[in-house]
Image 1 (spheres, rainbow, N blue to C red):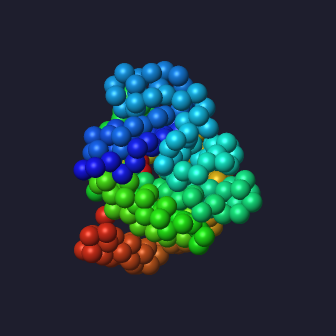
Image 2: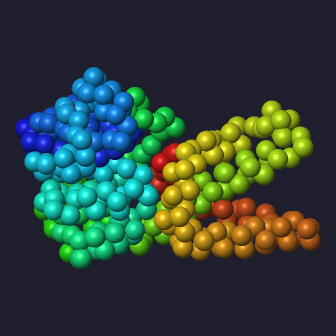
Image 3: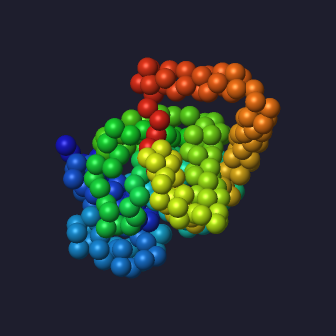
Amino acid sequence: MSAAFDKISIVGLGLVGASVALGLKKRGFVDRISAYDTDAESLEFGLSRSIIDEKATSIANCAEGSGLLVLAVPVRSIAASLAQLKDVTAIITDVGSVKSPVLKAGEEIFGESPANLVPGHPIAGSEQHGVEAADPNLFENHKVILTPAASTDEGAINSVEEMWQCLGARVIRMSAGHHDSVFAQTSHLPHLLAYALVDTLSVQGDSLEIFEYAAGGFRDFSRIAASDPVMWRDIFDANGEEVLDIMDKYMDELTEIRTLIAEGRMGELEALFKRAKVARDHFSSINVQPRKASD
């Protein structure tokens, strides 16, 4: 295919940023990729493996001459990165898992919602981290959600859609608020539960024996407790309101289940389990596949 862009810039050369860079290069979507990262070793590795074509000395330097810039930085760093791009005309997108704060930061920094800002969230991930784990096929057959503002330029949105489609992803648009509510329920709460369960069991006096005899279900559920604690701290900080809302509902459900067990109301408990099973079976029947827990 002919290149859609002469130059694309990647800020943050971790797993996602490096996978975007490598995937776009291998598919011929761009002629040249420039990258900036605070870790000089990541940039050197990216150059040595031809993941990127050039390393930049700053975010602003990275953006020079670029048609599209991807902020592949932690959620907590997106606002600070945007602040260094006030004079940039390139299309700007990000890969963070919380979207409302991105639009809010754009409005505060630019004085209005910038027409060239297209917030995005690729629903793909891995337990591996860093540029060394770059995978050009990381986004194949995964969803990417874009949450543009009403004032976002349609051409900018289309360009970001084309980039993700080139990487094999299915692109969906939704509002930032709806995105954050959905992912508080389907991703953020499950991660919180996994952390809480593993932490609870680890402080029991017989914790080693508990983990020794843990079955596959426990391993599958608790796997996401191995995710980056700093990243998830920042996600809960950024999406706290939505997470607290679904947490309250979940705690009400747990309280009800506890009452049913304590009072021996097994018929009602079974009915609750059946409702959950019917819902889960329905998801499978309509081919709605739950996301990978690491996403």
